[in-house]
Amino acid sequence: MINDIVSFLGENIEMIYILVLSVFVGVEVIGKVPAVLHTPLMSGANAIHGVVIVGAIIVMLNTPADNILALALGFVAVVLGTLNVVGGFAVTDRMLEMFKKK
Image (tube, rainbow, N blue to C red; front, side, top):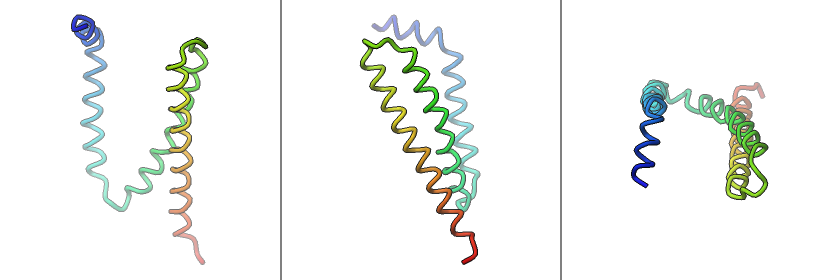
């Protein structure tokens, strides 16, 4: 078990470095955004979850029918990604309504 973990880390160390560095860069970028822009930024980020939906559908299409766990996780990813996209568009629409003349 430990040998498997060590070999996995050894084979994927570059990807782990990229993941850790991207977390630090993301925190720095978001930390510099003024509070006024958080809502539009987050609504746009929620809309990007369409990529998660497409990825989950592609994974589900390439998964054998007997792998119930992978299919269930893919289904959950599609549902949660769809909710996030719809929520992002709803927040954006509501935000844009505030700027319309009455």
